[in-house]
Length: 423
Image 1 (tube, rainbow, N blue to C red):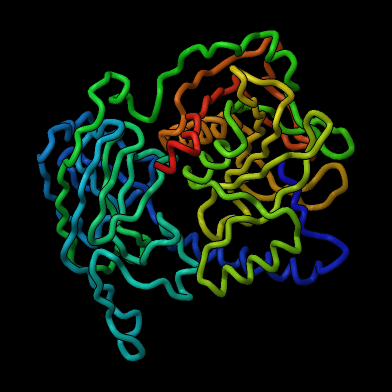
Image 2: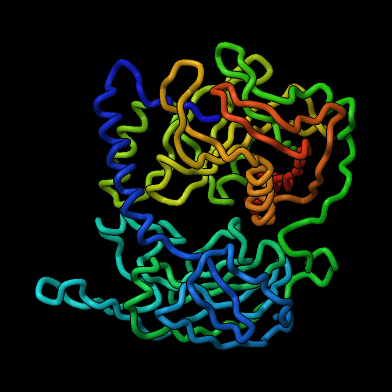
C-alpha cells in the first residue's frame, strides 16, 4: 500500500501541477515504450511483449579465453539474443562500429539524425520516452544479462569491458523506443571477445544467482518474532513483510543501488524541488515519495523504488525497509514490505486517492529477489515459510492481496575491509 501522500496543506497546488505533468507524460510514454526482448531460434529478434517471449534455449558458453563472436544489431531490432551463456565472473571486451539513422519526423522542419554506438545526446523530447538505460545516449548500444523483466540493461557504447555479476544469457540491444525502431535504418557491428572465462565452479553456471539453500540462524522461532504485516500511523494493518535481508546498512544500500533501485524522497517539498532539477538536467524522475508506515513501532528506515521513467506516478515497484532488533551470524536482519503500484483507487479510510497495488504480491517479492540477486552481491538465498503464513488480507486502504505465505531471504555479500579495498 502506498498512500498518495502528495496533498499537504502547504504547496499542494505546486505538487498537483507537478504530478499532472508526470501523469500526462505517462500517457504519452505508453505509445512509445520500449519492448522486451523476444528470442527466436535463429538468434534474431522481434519487438513484442515479454508475455509472448519464448524462454531462451541453452546456448554455447563463451568460456574460452580469447574466443570471439560477431553480431549485427539492426536498427529495427529492440534486442538480439547472442546465444552466449556467460558464467559468473566472466569478463568480456565488447566493441562496436557502424551507424544508425533516425529519419526526420517532419523533413520540412528537421533533419535525419545519424549516430554511432554511443548514441545521441539526450534532449527534452527524451523526457517523455522510456529507454532501457535511462542515463545512456538515445540509440546507444546496450546489453542485458537475461531476458526477464528483472534483467537490468547496461550501456555498452562503442567500447566496453564487462564482467558478468552472475551467470546468464547475453543480449545486445539499442536504447530506443518501439517508435524509433519502426523507422530506423542501419546497424551496429559488434565484436564480443572473452578476456577471462570466469569461475569453473558449478555454482558459477547457475543463472540469476545462488540456488535456494537453508541459511543458518533462520529458525521458525525467529520468524515468529517478526510481524507478518506493517501498519499505518493509525495502527491499521497493511502490507505484508515478504523479504528479509542479512547485511550491514552500507551493504543494503549498495545492493539496491547496484540493482537499479533508487531511494525515494522523504517529503513532498523534496519531490517538487528535485523533480524540477532533474527535469532541467534531462533526467528521469523516479523518487516520488511514499507514505510512512510502521514496523517495530517505528517508521521505515528506507524507501526504494524501481520504475520505468515517467510512469512512476501510476506504476512502480516499491518497498520499505526496517532494521529489525535481530541479527544473523552477527549481521543485522532487515525486514522489507514490497508491493507493485499498478494504478489508483479510492482509499476506503477517508475517500481520498491512493495507489492500487497488484493483489498478486508474490510477483513483487520475486522481482526484488531477481533484481538484487542479479547484482552478484547476494551470496545465499532461500524461501522460508513461518508458522503463521499470511495468504490473504487487505491493505490499510482497503485493497485486497494474496500470497503463498513465503518470505524470500537474501544474504548479502560482506563488504571488503577498508584496508583491503584501498590496496
